[in-house]
Image (cartoon, rainbow, N blue to C red; front, side, top):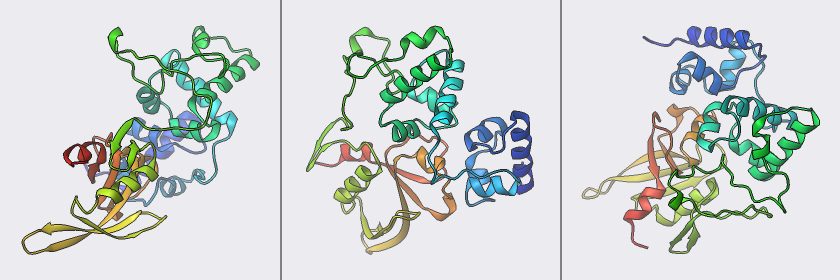
Length: 278
């Protein structure tokens, strides 16, 4: 059955009314309506456009979340999961991404410490509060939301609490790149290192969407090329979270491909470099 513009608007209004919201996170909409991001992007350039069409308040993505909003969301998620959960599970349940907490508090550890203090200040009491860290300098805390830990005890590795803002990816030792990318900038750099080997020629890189205009070889014998519009993301699913229009992009280049229903072609660099000699 075809999903119409009117159907999308009607579902936004219905869900927002049921939940008593003046706006509606797209993750909640997708979960409650069963309408995919690909479907609504056929009718609206961005999620905010859909929200405005439904008469609701658009979210200002340039404006960061307020501290109270972030902490309240943590409370709602952890109430559902009965305490700290894996990052994958958190992002499925939460209407605010894990990265938003990292940007606001500096790292996930600091967010959890602030969250525990906030709960105590409001006299909340949950059994799982003892699992939350109290102090960065004195508490060694296994970050359950950031890591999926194997049930096999032999696979569990010791982990320390960070006391600085410095972050590095896993050891990669690929040519001049010592560590794996941990953000979009690292993806851009790595793609630039190997794009020619992948059959791409970059025409332009810009700050707006899509990030890059390039040409790729489609016929080696005839030396024929085609134009492609590329969006760089650390994870392919971030394309969806940013509300980008798939019809205005041809290809996602990322480090990790975690979007099973992605309507676009994806190049996962983590897999690609295994086939390239360093």
